[in-house]
Length: 303
Image (cartoon, rainbow, N blue to C red; front, side, top):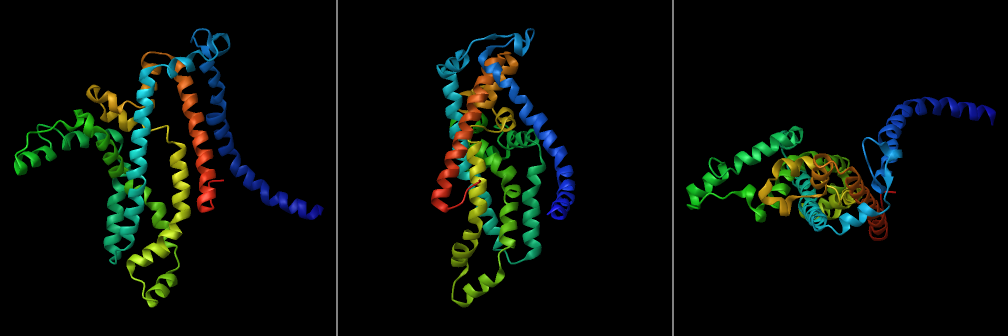
């Protein structure tokens, strides 16, 4: 027993040594900042510090729950996330399935490579591209409308009816290829003999797709769906901040931009901490409930 224990220690110690830097970084940057949560229950003052600031209890939580603007940004956050989930989450799945059906290997690799490229562009560049394409004066899209259909130029970026669609389309264009990498990996790992047996039994490409490819993708889809649901109350700050303008605040202002405006611009640190804490708690509850629902429906979950 002593010999087995010594051998086990010899094998595991190097692994723990390799794991130690990551655990230290995780503790310093993810757990230590949780100390700042108490600011949500204070009238925080930079000069008094965390320990010296006055305690106010649930004052800030009550304030933003009764603030009309908070419910506007909450609604916008959920609506945009729902569109992202409906179109942005399913697009990589459809894209991976379509590309997997290509027979020319060189053309397939070319399509995959081209689809990856937008991921490496910053949102500053992507927002500039969107503004150039949709510009009412010299934008490509408006020139096509005027030249082909004789329609007056449309200010797409300033229209409340089109702005959310632009957000979703920009996110899909930027991330569809990169998000499909995991699905490509799963599809490549499927046993080819399954397709051969299905072909011998008379199954066409569509039936092979439905009965072989999709069932193998289900575990990965469930995993990524749970991760996406856990961030349902959050949305990328850069995408919205760089594309929005004052004309579309009513439909584009989300929790992250709202926190930026009242936290950093107006220096209301306690209020923004309270909003961020509420957002995190709601996200955690959504993750737990969706994981439990996934276990009951498909028999698998994140944990």
